Length: 446
Image (tube, rainbow, N blue to C red; front, side):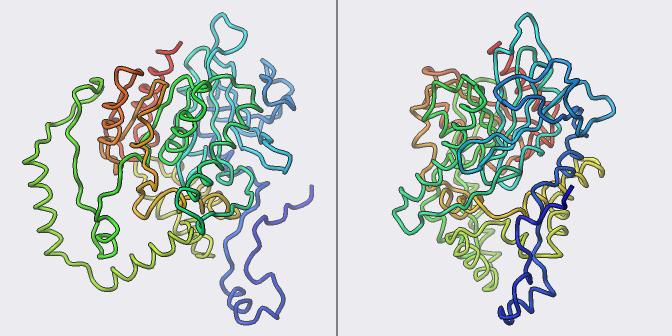
């Protein structure tokens, strides 16, 4: 078999006429990866209790053979009793595809075909491999098919060129970016032959899943938003404070009595809010940011507005790129050393593949992860059952979910979970509690 060519050119591959830039690139090669190298992803999935096979049918909308005898095993764990397929699902005539993990008909009752579908969408800077601690347990819910996708232009999906509309109005800029993801998800659903689904999105995936449910409510049986970004409005002085080197003054919203009692919240009074703000103001005054910090933050904000993404930093780091990822994943103390190594290799690979829709983040969010068009102004019209999940130590404020629940409670069913001993990556940090909560929401439909 021919050796696959790099899908992203390495610095220094041009002619000598490129001058100093080419000379520099010979000593500092840009990080690259090949899209055909699946072994890194398979090594991660092998730790998830799955037997991963190649497609046993050319039509992804058809279930695989029951015994999978004709399928080729790609990866397996020591005790794998759950069969999963890796699919690249074509979504248009231009060669674009959505990379998909499909677990179908592993646990059934009396039906020949599973009655419900769970579709998991990942967050920014991640991919479907980041749910490797969840697939096996979720597949044990009878009569459910489990799907997990890489967003178009991210993970191991195809990497079409993304053209920002940042030269147009902000509304046009946001609408163009959102449509890129929402419509590709709809194309994928049609290709897979899924009539209705429980849509579970984490972080950025939660934001896009919410928009999908708003546009295509007839296709969503339940919406599960896992630490979703983009719900609250940015504080009025946020960008000014950020350029000065400070974070925004955090205003907590008192918990709503209308939220379902899946968690406990301490009462937050107006006096407590004012005391917290006064304390923060005093701390900021004592710790006035340096001029260097202000310059660096200003530079980062300008790069953000020009659609530069964190992955650009990783690619540009060249031979140091893997060290950056190792440092980031190395903080995941809840994983074993073997798991961190596998996840780091996977995260590095999907980060150095060609840049694509990652640059859309600057079209959707302002610096600081506040949405240009906050979901709090849009989710009031949601018509499908909606569930929120947050980590108890999450940097995404759960009170954003509470705000939405206050607006829609009584019209659609709602729920809110706070997963203990977990932060933003709650599905990785406390998989047992996360899996139990999500499985309970699945069984409530069954």
